[in-house]
Amino acid sequence: MSSGSSGRAGDKFFSGLTLAAGIVILAVLAFVAGFLVLESVPALFAPADQISAGTSFFTYVFPIMIGTLITAAIALLIATPIALGVALFISHLAPRNLAKPVGYVIDLLAAIPSVVYGAWGMLVLGPLMVPMYDWLHTYLGWIPLFGEPSTTGRTLMTASVVLAVMILPIITALSREIFVQTPKLHEEAALALGATRWEMIRMSVLPFARSGVVSAIMLGLGRALGETMAVTLVLSPGILTANLIGSGNQTIPSEIALNFPEAFGMRQNELIAAGLILFIITLLVNMVARFIVNRHKEFSGAN
Image (cartoon, rainbow, N blue to C red; front, side, top):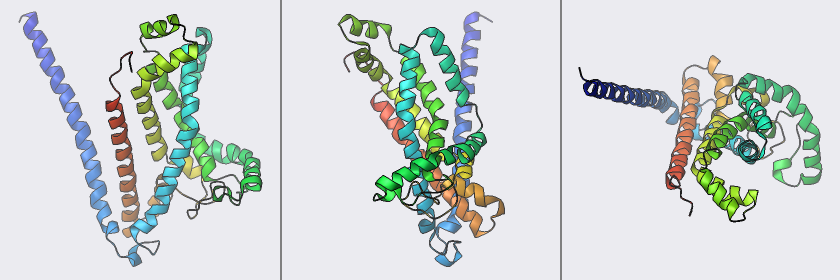
């Protein structure tokens, strides 16, 4: 057999293998979505007296859905600027003998189990933040977000900070890899024209990395939306309130983790339906991210 024929056979085999892998991923996603929908239907259309909260399913799921979104949003607001700053420091500002150790430490953060983060948030971070919560309540208590503070620190804000630490290495590592791929000619041209280091980063590095950074942020948001154990350990169960520094509030993953082992019948359907809501939210987040990335995937020195 000639080398050309064997090469074509290898191409066909590789093409079929990648196609099969893609089909498997789609099939798994379809099976998961089908399972969630089928198991959720009884709860979605059940009368209020059959729902454990004594209300309609959507009245039950709305508070924990809002808690999930608030926690993830605050975590993203905290983690994103820090992650981008660290990524730029490692890729463009730090000496090589310092950049590598910092990069290793950031990567190591991603390997820590979520239950360890949860225990740290509950036992260490929560009590440490209590004085800050007292200060916020004393001087900003007229804002509903800073109402009566928790004495244990197990609040939505503490959970958000824990999530921010958890998603920090994801955003940092991906952004760093994108930043170092910036064409050197673009950077050198900006510096040759008299730009400062910051102006070079702003005009050359950040536009080039825009779509990659958006993808990194969305991956971090997906992690924050779906995190279970860390949030479950940090939060003390309760009803939804506007108070970020008080006890109470809950998220969809922690609600499922706390109640699913003992659930049966309609209660089980409720929790699976809550999982379906989280599945839809995550799917929408990824669709928005893909739309943004596709809009800005082309880069030239003029944009």
